[in-house]
Length: 88
Image (cartoon, rainbow, N blue to C red; front, side, top):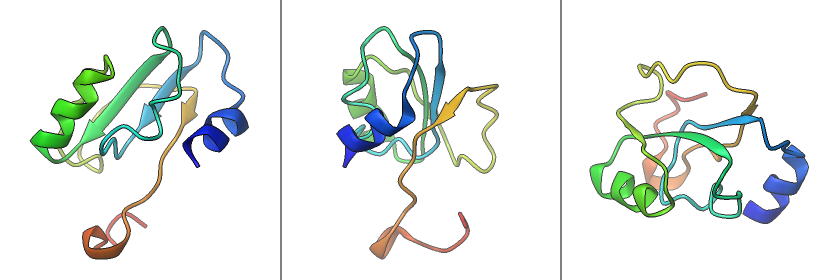
């Protein structure tokens, strides 16, 4: 799934990518390390995992975060026990 999302995004090297629900980084894992990525993550333990991918996440709820401007959004909205429908 992540590889397909990456290919569908057709990213250029200069594109700034936003992952508003960073999670464990599965969507940003296939991105080149030099790609500019901003991730927002609510849980501190998952934010630590994102740092292992070289991303300095914004810790908090993405509905309240101010991540700046981006060219591409890659996300997989919450589901299952984590879904509260407040994210659309």
